[in-house]
Length: 213
Image (cartoon, rainbow, N blue to C red; front, side, top):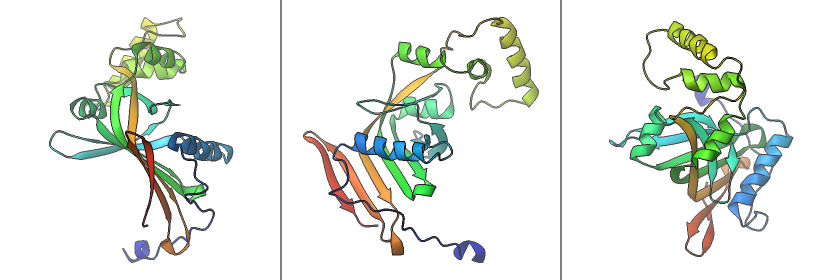
């Protein structure tokens, strides 16, 4: 434990203030994401998705952002997975992006809903064939006795769709849109006096406030 307690990092690469931040949080997010892409960070679209069960127990996992729309943030998964089941029972969720090299974090809270079926089909069929096959094979989050089961199912599905490059989308697979009511931008600063600017959605638009670090 003493080694962990000694870990320190001083943040000093940038600042964030009410004058420089873009007043539309979606555009501010796109600006930061583009800078993460330009810097060639590993998987800059990776985000931690947190969901909550009906008995109030949280779950977290890393998923990939696959779209930014006017109303929110898009990702894809198995609707019958643990996260899919929890979102069906409780659509409130949160997303967290952390770009270590840029000393930045974005935290998003909102409500999740399924996207249109045709949008899910279009994205599914744009994926590499291995990823399409994998979506058919895996009963995501369900217990399995061994890996061989997956490999056998993969071979069977591969034979079933032999010669195709665009498979039909499995019914249990598709996209979600997270519609935010809160977006917080965090920029690391010296002496742990970090910049935290939070946008809250209101009937009149987005309200910007500064939070203490």
